[in-house]
Image 1 (cartoon, rainbow, N blue to C red):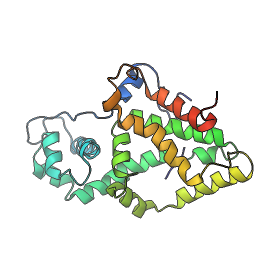
Image 2: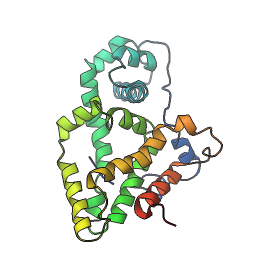
Image 3: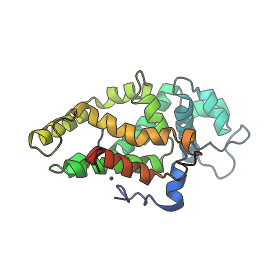
Image 4: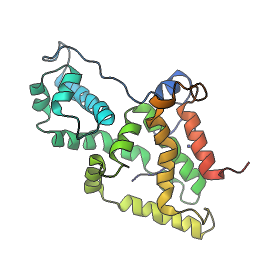
Amino acid sequence: MPESPDTKGSRGSLPLTGANVRAAVVVEAAPVGRRPGRPVGGVTGAMQRARLLDVALVLFARHGILDTSLAAIARAAGVTPAMVHYYFRTRDQLLDVLIDERFVPLRAMLGGAFEDNPDDPVSAITELARRLVNVAREHPWFPTLWVREVISEGGILQQRMHERFGDEHQRKSLKCIRRWQEEGRLNADLEPSLVFLSLLGLTLLPLATSKMWRNESHRASLTPDDIARHAIALLVRGIRA
């Protein structure tokens, strides 16, 4: 699993401020539907295929992969089931395409924070937190899908990602954390295997559950930037003043 917060995030992402930031707290974006049929004029095959992937991601995040059929994706996209099958013969093939075209780039966006800060664990963990929140801002389906299908037991996406990439990246990250502890750069009481899980819980979980709390008066003004700041403060300085 990749690792590793600067208000601009990484790789050209936009600042976490203003209207763009507030919109990012809305985790699900309902796909725009239309009456079933063939693409209307001006819609190319590549555009139609990309739109079906976008709809699939939203539905997978909302209902789970196992509970989302190709027929449901067709209904949400406003096309015929035959059109979905034209691009993706099975749901498994669709999932493989999503991994190749959507999750591999996201994995690259999240990776590199530890490698970029080999002797500075605070900067490394801070950068990873910012990257997580920036990815969630740019891809509103990401937090819910990650919680449902990657860090939950039995998640289909987690299984497929592990089959594809293994755990070499995670093992390297754990080794780096242990080295920092041995060098006195990182709190020796931290459990290395829980650092990433803690970071995910502090960043993605609030975003994934935002529909449950965003109308509460004491949380309504929270932005992804606030979530990143809170996660960093809690991980780096704990609860001490």
